[in-house]
Amino acid sequence: MERIDKVHGTFEKRITDAQKTTVSAAVIRRLPRYHRYLGDLLREGTLRISSAALSKLMNVTASQIRQDLNCFGGFGQQGYGYNVKYLYGKISELLGVNEGFRAVIVGAGNLGKALAATHMFERRGVERIAMFDVDESVVGTRICDLDVYHVDELRDFCQKNGVSIGVLTVPKEAAEEVVATLVEAGVKGIWNFANMELKPPSPDVIVENIHLGDSLMKLCYELKTSAEG
Amino acid sequence: MERIDKVHGTFEKRITDAQKTTVSAAVIRRLPRYHRYLGDLLREGTLRISSAALSKLMNVTASQIRQDLNCFGGFGQQGYGYNVKYLYGKISELLGVNEGFRAVIVGAGNLGKALAATHMFERRGVERIAMFDVDESVVGTRICDLDVYHVDELRDFCQKNGVSIGVLTVPKEAAEEVVATLVEAGVKGIWNFANMELKPPSPDVIVENIHLGDSLMKLCYELKTSAEG
DNA sequence: TAGATTGTTAATCGATTAACAATC
DNA sequence: TAGATTGTTAATCGATTAACAATC
Image (cartoon, rainbow over all chains, first blue to last red; front, side, top):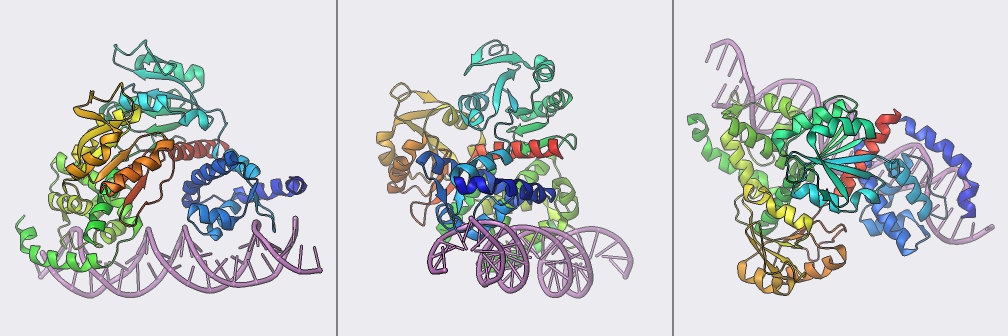
């Protein structure tokens, strides 16, 4: 740990320099996976790990790991490797874990309920603060400690509570209108499960489209191809 | 339609030739998206579309579309473009839609229920035929027209019913054991929602790992970066 | 110091785009 | 035939891997 502290000063400088250039989408996509593996290692009590060891674990090249991490700064030490706790912390920081983003789930159907029930959000420092629906039979109830409000209140609620993320689990017909409301209320990130592709409604709004069906199709393709070959 | 028929014979030959060489993972990943867009066009009654028009719709280059489709054969016609219905059918075929794969959902928790409730499977020609759990309070009930059996019966059931796909929505502690059972029973595809990475337990078993948390993290990263920049 | 392992540059590989001849 | 648009080759671009000097 002492060695890590010693170089801290130079780290910070290098990080700042590296972040000036934008990081490729391929690297960003891999960051959450690093974060997961490092979290596991941390829980197992591993103190340090080399790019070679991590590469074996994750089934990627050591070169790629070093290259990826160096987009953001020098997080390791020659002759030593990476301090797991430190690296995990740095990647957490990069990914915005514990930025304190607040999320609402719009759509209290099966998927909305399933997402409300997971620990996915809190584990990543994202706070779910409410659910919304139009169905009068669920409005007013509580689902997994979350109050369910009517969509009519969505705009005001988001504005008042500084919501940054809207999780969309509504039917696709309702999606466009809900998004417009969210954006009006200043929500900057849309996590879209509505089974249709949402174009970013404004350049400063981030949309992440989820298409589970695409993944099922890929599985079918590979099943079919594997059976043929 | 007549023009399409005329060239059918040559199509088939070209397809066979093209499929000999393996298609890159990048292309495969894009196929389901083409399938979605073409399905939409078909429902709207569009008869033909050029790579240029489709590229505008999908926000990719026309070159990429032509290049991608030609991995599998010449599906279009010079001077005409692509017949939507024909191309949709071809991509459906490629992806294994209506191969009649049978699936079971293991884990009747919130996510299992949510997946059982969607039309995702039937829309892609995959038949859900049962659910499994260990919780005695759900075993014996029916969820969305699916019987819920005890996991003890999983092996026999899959063997008897020729199940190809196992959808894993169990806690990660239970995942390894369930996978072993599925593989024993001849299941060849695992759609894994168990929040841990599953290595293919045997070379002829296909695993598709879903990590919704990674997607949420990417959204957070982009939110954070967009706010900074 | 000697050994280990990073950070980083250079080489390779693959994927995307551009261009155009073939052809409907 | 003339116009349109594919299929396909060649050029470009970017991402991955290899290699090694820097350094802990």
